[in-house]
Length: 168
Image (cartoon, rainbow, N blue to C red; front, side, top):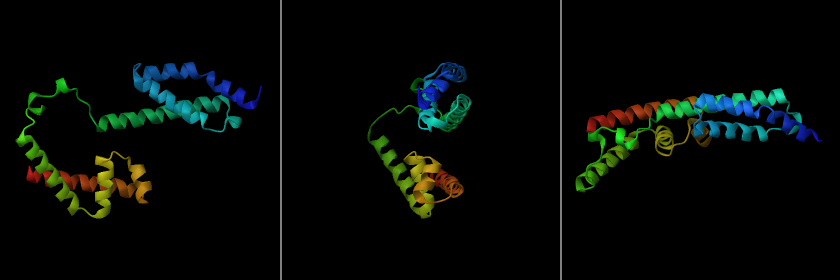
């Protein structure tokens, strides 16, 4: 049996326990399977020759913990409400000219507010809030520090929120 076969079997020994832990943590949801899959995939990309059972077990649990934190942050940032849970006033009632005019007016106000922002503030805001990029991805793309990207997004968000509040 080769070293890679041995190390592969060593981490498989804790896989059942690891899956049960993920299922308990996420209440048996699909998130548990996603977290476990991502952790195992990351583990398989590591150098299998130097992997011990203890290291593999620690790596799986640490990866799952980090992924769980990421999911929690994403879910707390973007609250999901089912359509039928929305208050009646929040439901769009018509798709007529008024709705289109209102949407166009909002779009123009947003564009005008974004044009007033400094370039890096605008880029960071658009990539994060509109395109859905993470702050780390934006920092790499724009060749800026993560702290700068965080600050730019916060300042731009506050500016846009105030500007749109004034107009609507």
